[in-house]
Length: 261
Image (tube, rainbow, N blue to C red):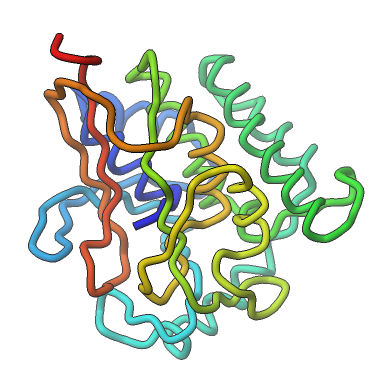
């Protein structure tokens, strides 16, 4: 089901030996107005974690066109107002974002990874808009919820410290999504730019399954894309999404050893 920042974070959270300690580390970031709350969720009767990232007490969300959300409402009408409100504070330059990240109380490697993810996002936005990179101002990906997702995933990867990260081909979804620049085809242009050279597909599910933030995180951390390698795993993480689709809306992570070890 593609990848979004909160779903990646939730699936990695489930791989943690000490989930309580990791949640505390997220809270200790003290990102202004941001709180992380892992809650139990279900999709197609599969239990997993949904990572609620609240900004000043409200959970931010994207707007697919004609996609049913978790409460059964049509997102086009249900989230129109909150989407507009979101963009009142959603314009940040790369240097503002990187400066903000660099002052967070976390390990320098995590800071470096997070800034590198944003560099990928900036370069993709510059390419699709035909603009110099220093003129790019982020929209959805520049808001606090996306910064919180990127930092959270970078912190989780540092905590797990895998030798190799392998991802399956990416399901991008289909249809259209409403964003800061208007109604765009799925995958959104920045997502499509980020996934150049990566195996992708759509199985007909309507909606944005892979977001720009999710694409940037996958392509930054993945060493390879392809089928699951021969491995012996001992942990499985299910990151549950907010929206309802005809398929289980989750990102699944496996943690284990290469081969039969």
